[in-house]
Image (cartoon, rainbow, N blue to C red; front, side, top):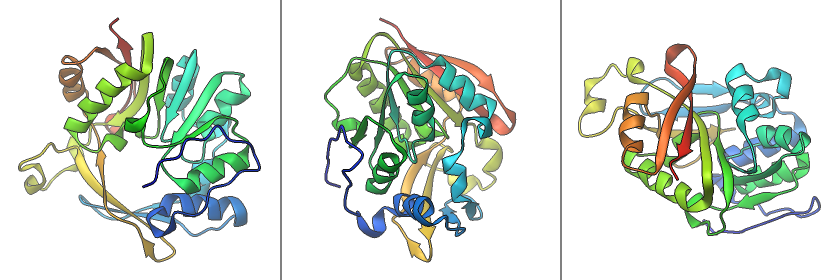
Length: 248
């Protein structure tokens, strides 16, 4: 995927990335036409999951307490990674906070532009060079973008480069061990390393890796990095909110 960096004005838009940008295309479609067609997620571990697209456009009063708590902790220069439709970033912007939204999807970038976000980056986090952030934010199981345990380690190392002294990383994830009944899925890899494929209106995108990290594994990984983990909110079915504090 070509990498572009934008600090964009409202009248600038990106061209479509084609069928590989299923999520972005679906969100744009909903924003323009209010389509009721669901986004379908095929998974490597169970039945398909259907998502109503209006879920990505929630207002503050529609968000769960976990997400609202995470937003309340954001401070300083904030980077939201994997912003999607930009709903969390918009709330922070409305609160007058210094928020930049980042996503690799051209469709998502266009959605955020149309919704009025002022500072947007279209790029892969691993290609970022600018830093000095005080908060990195990843919500809606956002740490899943790392895909694999070894890439989570790489992400935490990259996060050290991008952040200022005393910074924090805030994200939610889920311990999915209770969902994995097929022992064959455990052979040779961590049980939280799963695969997804998006489908919208009959068009399927490529399969991609997604990571769900359990708290014990997170603590072990962080012990090898410059981050000190805290589990600060827990919900049912293994869903939790984590805050990593920079050790220096």
